[in-house]
Amino acid sequence: MSATPSVTSILAPDWGEDLSATELIAQEKSNLHKELEWLLRMEVPAVFMQLGLMLKDCAQTLAGPSGVSSAVAQASVFTAPITNTSDSVKGFAMLEGSRIIKADVTVRFSKWNKSLPISTSITSKEPWILSQIQNATNYVQLALSELDDSSLQHGLFHTREQVQSVMDRVMAFLRKAQDQLLFQSNLFPYNIDDLQLNAFNPRLPADLFVDFSINYAALNVSVYACTLLGTNQPARKPSSVARKKADMLIGYV
Image (tube, rainbow, N blue to C red; front, side):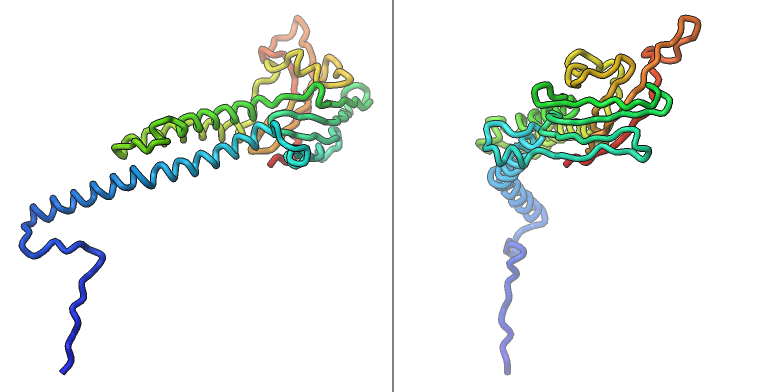
């Protein structure tokens, strides 16, 4: 004759056999409420702290080195060739954060400037600033500011709606940052100013412009040959600029 041991499940609390259905439901709600309180007090602040560290690292990568050793700064510089299938545009660019600190560009068009090449350079003294990366960095910083709120640091969450509200704001800023790195800026020719023109040495001819932008996380180099329309020709675009050559990609991490 063998005895079968009594096994009590540890997956469900022992509420006894004398509780009514209403009492069981009330007990379950109480346990769920205690579990939610524990999550809000212990888990959510820890997860938000980890997310904040990841966003700080992301912001530092986008912004580039500041106050770091030369070895670390050198490791954060990305260099890639500028090429296209027809070899009408060649060169290289060095990217550090939101700045192109060095670049050599040679342009040769068969129907422009009698096919004579035009060469120019960018140096760290007059870097080219990529506003899209600057904007992405600012959006990441705004997301961080939501996580750095004093109530988050002390775990003062009382409802899941509070957590959802914070995450909605954080994700809204991160989506805007992502859009800056995915979609090419179409500001030309309105983004032409002296700061950008002065970045090139020697200065480009008046009818040639080189533009740098970000498109799907890659540095996009666009070259424009510009022609002024005659007074008897209707302007099809307010810019009165004809785009002759564009879209050479170099890698960007």
